[in-house]
Length: 466
Image (tube, rainbow, N blue to C red; front, side):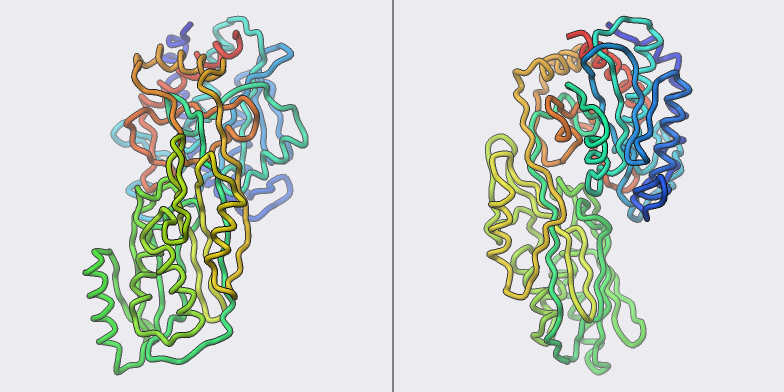
């Protein structure tokens, strides 16, 4: 069963709707009445629910935490769980991150592939099924979340106020299908600075990163340096940067030195694809002649226990299994001032490991005055590849693409598939495709977008008629 003709006829509307939703800066902001995650997120949710209502679907707004569009009848429900919130845009974009502009057949914008584009594709897929008039044995509900990137408060609220789907998928990972997802642990490691010593070099402040689950592409530090040692310190910094082959720039301000560290952004689940601007700056600072005080101890911990390695090996976190591979450790945010230092860490651990084991190892490695705080996390996900759900979706994928080679995969990323039982991640990135989630110049190819609508329409039909 295909709905290709209907989808081709609505292609212009699909593209327009994707452009429009990308123009909302739906980064988590200050809570407001009816907008628990900020105004930008609320406007994005309002837009998609209004669009769904115009399509003739039953819609519901769950107090700004989430919303859904529903179609069909039946006692059982197929769910599609997408999210409208996005991570901060970062720097260095070629095109406006909230412009929804089309260049070279690509729609650019934060959220284009993660996850606004696939959310719109799912909505139009359901419209194609509805407009075709085919009969369905189950109802379909597309749930639009608003807090996937920063805590899943939307899902908690939904679970407390509405019905769970019986089976379904999230369009927020990779094809052909994700059957396993590593556990996620986000924590804060901080230290109050009580022991400060004067030296000819003093770190006054450091700031880098915007989210724990992003590899930071920028970090900046301000050093006070004794005037007679300034030229020597600048020379030493540049020599270290050259030896380490890192991208930094130096400038002077208020008699001190500003070091700007430039890395490469990537999703926190794939740190190997980025360059951590925070950690490359820490490795430079670690080799300067600081007084051996609390600030230096804080820097030293991260330099010696983390460094540029993202496997956690130096902390005893070199954990792996045959299903999902090895643990990853990403320093996503760090701030240091005269009074304290804190870092937000995003860890992805193998499906056969446990949160308490990982936490225990981290705490053992921390100096006595360091403070560990658990921020959020999710247990690993594993769904059998022999289940009816995975078999049906794999069949849909193979028929739609002709790809009989690609197999279900495990990832380090965390998706909404963990929210409900009998859920998996299904697309939107095709095998061999560029991973653009959380990166600058995020885009979705127009042909890719239309292909998603066709695949998801078939998936809806098949899951409703098992």
